[in-house]
Amino acid sequence: MVEPTFLLPLMLSLLLIHLSVSGEKTVLPLHKFPWKQLSTSNSPSCSAQKSRIEKGATILEMKHRDYCSGPINDWNEKLQKRLISDENWVHYLQSRITNSVSGRIEGLSQSQIPLFSGIQVQTLNYIVTAELGGQNLTVIVDTGSDLTWVQCRPCQMCYNQQDPLFNPSISPSYQSVSCDTPTCQSLRLATGNSGVCGSTGTTPPPCNYKVSYGDGSYTRGNLARDRLRLGTTAVGGFVFGCGRNNRGLFGGASGLMGLGRSDLSLVSQSSSVFGGVFSYCLPSTDAGASGSLVLGGDPSVYKNSTPVSYTRLVQNQNPRLSVFYLVNLTGITIGGVTLQAPNSGNGGNGILVDSGTVITRLPPAIYRATKAEFQKQFSGFPTAPSFSILDTCFNLTGYEEVEIPTIKMNFEGGAELSVDASGTFYFVKADGSQVCLALASLSNEDETAIVGNYQQRNTRVVYDTKESKIGFARETCNFFA
Image (cartoon, rainbow, N blue to C red; front, side):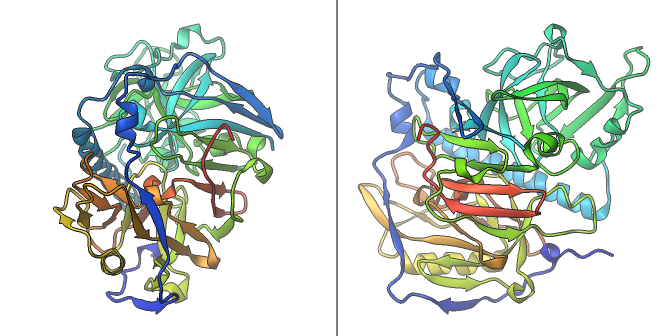
C-alpha cells in the first residue's frame, strides 16, 4: 500500500525556533480598498486590447468586462459569499485526492499572457484570455484541474458569461474526439470520471465527459480538438471539453484552463512548445492591477526582486496522485519566529500549491501554532467575530494602516514563499470592522494542506514539470512594467 509523505498523520505539537527577538513586520495600508476603487462611476475602458513581444515572449493585455459593467452594489455580500464558495472548492479537492488514493473513479518558446484578478468576473480566482478556433475566450486559470473546457453552442444549459459562447460550427479546425480513442480514456486520470460514448447516431460515437466540482458546479459535454492560440503562439489539435451542460460559480468566465500535470492538461499538451514550464504572478484585487502568466522557461522575462528558490515536487508511485502539484512544507515563520512543522526531518508535510483555492488551509496542529503566534505579535487591536472558515478576526475600523507580522512559508530544500501584505488579511466587511487572518484550519490532520492564491499574491511562482520542481520569488505584479 502506498503511503505518500503528505498523507501521514501529523504530530500534535510544534517546535518553536526563535530567529528574531524584535520580530519582522510590514505595513498594510487599509485605505486603498478595491471595493472603493471599483465602485466609482469612472470605469476604465475595456475596448483597447494591447500586446507586445518581449525577449521571445508574446504578451497580451487583458481587461475584465466588469470594469465596464458599473459599480458592485453590496461588497459585504460578495466578500462573504466568496469564502463559502472557496470552502466548497476545497471539499472538491480533498475528495479528488481521497478518491485518487483509494482508486475510486466516478464515471521551447514562451508566451506571456496578462493575468488579472477574477474579482471582476464575480470570482476570486484568476483569468486570462486565449483564442480557441479563432474565437477569444476568457477562462479561469487553475493548477488544480487538468481538463480545459469552455461553454459551447448549441448549449442545453449554460450559465451567463461575458464573452459570446464558443461556436464550433464557425471554426475550420474543430474536430470531435471519438470514444474509442486513448484520448477519451485519459479522462479517467484527468477528471476522475471515465469518458463515455455519446448517443448522437454518428460513427464512431463522440467521447462525452463530465466534471463535478463538489459544490453543485459541473460541466458536461463532448471532448474535442481545435487550434489554441496563446498570444501569437499556436498549439494545434488542442484537446478540450466542449461544454453543453454547465452550471456553477464560474462568474462571467467562458470556462476553465487546466494547468495540472495529466496528459490532458495544457502543460502536457504544449510541452513540445513550452518545455513543460510555466509561471505566474498573481496581482492583488486593486482596480487596474494586473499580473502575467508566462508559458515557457526563459527566466529573463520575470520581474522578480529576489532569486527564485526551488523545492522538489513530491513523487508518488500512485499515478492518480501525480497530477497534483505537491511540495513538502517544513515550517511557517511569523514575524521572525519559525514554527517547525512535524515530520520536517523527513522532508516535511505535503501541501498542494493551487491557483484555484483562495485561502490557504493548514493542518490543525500547524494552524493552531500559527494562529497563537500571530495573535501574540499582533496584539492590542480589538477583536471581531469569526466568519465561515476564518476564526482570527479583528476590528480595524478607523485605522489608515497597521503594522503586521510577516508570514513566510518554508519548504524542503530551503525554498521560501514570503506572503505579501495584501495576502495576510481578508476583509469580511468592507468598512474594516471584520478583518480576518487569511489562513484556515483543515478539519483533521489527515487532509491535505493547500497554499491558496490569496497567499501567492505578488509572487512569481514557477512550475517546472520537466525538472519536477516549483520555485518562488518576490515580484510586484505589473503586466505593463
